[in-house]
Image 1 (cartoon, rainbow, N blue to C red):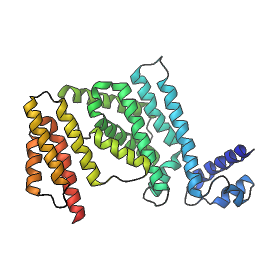
Image 2: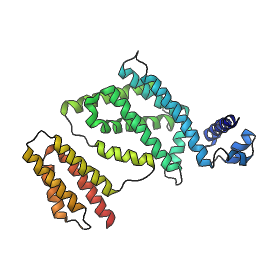
Image 3: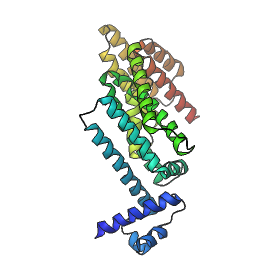
Image 4: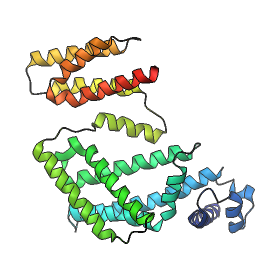
Length: 299
């Protein structure tokens, strides 16, 4: 009986949020629609925010279940599956246009809503990563996060065109077009052996923070990048003497940056020395950026 009442509340919330949006919907509206007292509704959901989050969770779970069904279908190619998966995202937002409006209006808000949307975004990015790796294969893994951003950004702009601008685009055609372009970019990246912009160590920390609803400090990002540098140096196809040089430089850099007032000349010199090893250049540029951001924040 209790689960039936809860389901009725969620169904009512779906109707009201769909018609009026989050801000214009009250708990009293939903309680009246369900034929229960407002206090009874609070036994299931402590606030309108809790109800809104539960409603969104049910919608997202339905989307991900559909995607998992597509991935489990072994009668179609990996590319066909990823096109269908991409089309699923479009159809989800077309069938739930109000979700886009809620995200646009409530994204910067305080309370539980903003962290929840961050978690939604993190889950979407991880699902996109898994889908792209499944489609493109492990060879693209070093550059996977760059492709995730290009894929997600392209999808987002087309979704906005369809949802907010009412452009008469055919979802299946758009999905196939996007997947074709991503496949071409991945092929070019592999052929040219392009160095990644977004490194896994940075993105993994970022997504973990998004999922936990917290922010990662400049110092934590810098520390993780330095530790990743040391790990990368061990795997480089260079002489042991060169590995020792680079490792020593990174360790000295760690020690200097841990000081309350690190010497900027020494930090720049060490970063320049390590960055001369081309496999490490992107990492040293990121560390330099985090150092500059932290100094600017402190000032």
